[in-house]
Image 1 (cartoon, rainbow, N blue to C red):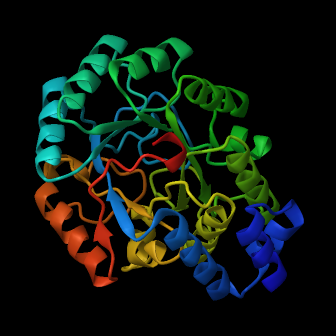
Image 2 (image 1 turned 90 degrees about the horizontal axis):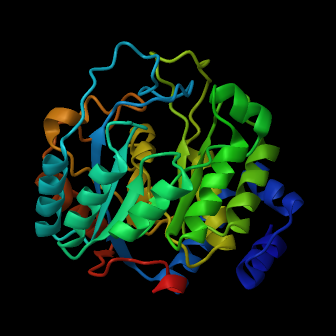
Length: 341
């Protein structure tokens, strides 16, 4: 254990067998402690807040694990018009957010012209803009970059091609990887990540996922635990994958010490203090919800989502107080990956 952790900290590199050892060991506290020290040394104690605006829950895709999937007839669908999105972003900027994250299902209503206008208007608020809107063509990614988008988040979920094909009917792992290559080529900060605990996922495939994220290399890695949604056809798994998701996140911090790593909201669905725990195991970003309260309950990728009854303003200052409770403070910068700043 100590020799592997020493190698990770001193070289930022491990081979697959060493990653597997860390994934399988029960000595998790040592991994978490090492990751927290690396986080402190390389990205400091400041926590970057990103305002998350979930502007549409329409999606053309039919991923088996997602509550927003096209085939789920129980979802109350909604989409915000461009001016509503811009107004929410303006409020978020007034609350002190330095990054706006625009997230939706893959909704064809938002054409290149509509999205480009939204992005360019939000940039007037002197914020960074992150897009999380799925698979697009190179031309679409290029237009959004030219409109001012700074970052793009597209989780790979799994690099196991057989599992990917099973979970994402009508999609392909090859195209997903093409999208990430295009995003990188266009000069975005690249965000990706995986879901931990998927039915049929192996520890070996998670190790390969970690190696893939390092190979890109990503500027931001989001690790989310799988949470079963009863309105999806995926099988329900037993147990809670919170600890394993934390460990994957911590290993990525060891191997990529200066990237941005969010304490994901799903962590807190599985553990009441999930985001604070993640911030003490290598994470340095939190994405509070800046969507109006009326829409939050309908953006249900997984059930049990936290804070669905809270206002954007409440979420902003609630999370700041939580961060201060662990002797950390909110960053005042836009939080670019150090290599791009």
